[in-house]
Image (cartoon, rainbow, N blue to C red; front, side):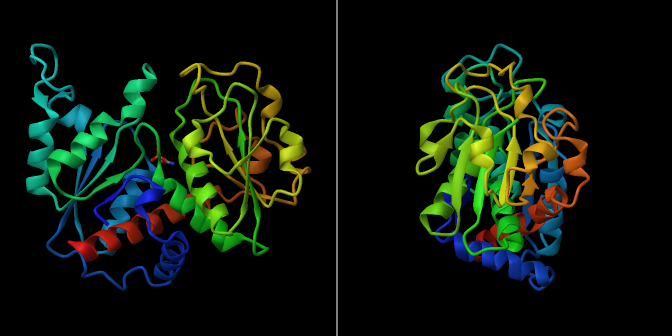
Length: 319
Ligand code: CP
């Protein structure tokens, strides 16, 4: 594995989930694998889970880590080609990435979409140039379109907690106070569609009309605009807000009745409730759900360590 930016970088999702669950039993079994190697973890934006879980995974493998808050600690970066750099950016991604490649054996990066231009965000320009110019394996910690380590942790969590062989998994849109990126739902959908193709689960997406995700990420999913109908018999409900893809970045203002609470839970098969976190209590999910017995959100966040660790282990094995 030379990069991990999408489910497409994984040859066998069933195996990688199984390997992660096995590794969770003995997380220090490979504690010498990364000795002498360095993981650079670059943040363009804030993070709690991605920041700490990736460092913890690296420590479990004996890797050194360097955490860089790029926007605060380094020079402002220019990512466009063939421009005269007479504005704020003091360094070009070509040099910055190449230099990081000199210091690090693997790079992990968070670069959230700016939500101003769909073309810019969906081009993944920064991520692609980091991969090209650093010339070392790169792991996405959420970029313009996808959040693959979150989705791998989600699939691990589903596999660990499923009560039947082929559970029904529902991704439901939720209201929010501001427009959120589509990276988490795109990624969750991409992983669940792949899992569905491989017979592991059934996958349904429910959201108000106008909030359709880009179709390349939802191929094979059942789209149901009736939330209560979609939730019927659900074994897992993944609650997440996102803004419009077609009317890029626009928030949906009439979504109050999509709020997920115990009334909504009654439509399901006593489903487990998931969310990538951070979550605003009382905005998209009710406290009674987050504090209740059906919530998996903390276990899900815990599994971010093992998702990161299995990917780092795969990459280290090929260095
Ligand atoms: N779920 C997730 O990626 O959380 P952070 O933004 O805190 O890393």
